[in-house]
Length: 234
Image 1 (spheres, rainbow, N blue to C red):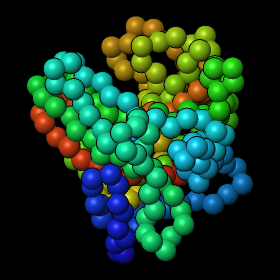
Image 2 (cartoon, one colour; image 1 turned 135 degrees about the vertical axis):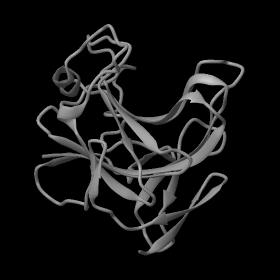
Image 3 (cartoon, rainbow, N blue to C red; image 1 turned 180 degrees about the horizontal axis):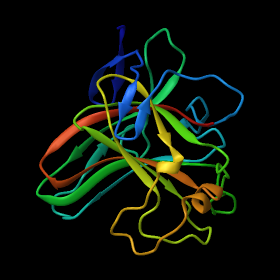
């Protein structure tokens, strides 16, 4: 195992530059795959006005939510903005990733901090959908501390698909900087959602992907997240 250092916000992280194989709660940690049948959604090598964007120019922004306004969730990204920080995994590695620190407070029945990665650059102030329904998996590289799991949400906003909870998957994270594979056929809406939508329709008109650290019956916790290389593939 080779460790490389990452500087993100007020956190200094040691990221394991190794991929571990195994099955974890429906998501599979796999070695990085190379193939023609794929779509690179966001590798964060593209920068606009000094900020990271997806490969098709979509905005990348941090957000929070919580049950109690008096116990707010917090994030730390690039300066005082709602944009994650651009980092390199080592001084000699030109590859870029995004990173942010988070804090969840209690008591809260629920709370979270996440990053929204928009599929494409907006046109006339409106989200532009991207059809990814032909792919079987989303892979992403991720490092997270302070949490045992991360949720990935697939959204279609402003496209006639309205619901309070979009298709998603929560998977356990392992120590280190790993590549996770999320089977798209395993996505499901939360059980409490009344407005049911089909996963295929959302993937046909995908406008953004959220990656979220969350809690229920929250106790105070904090940590850091590093994300890179979101890729749809078969």
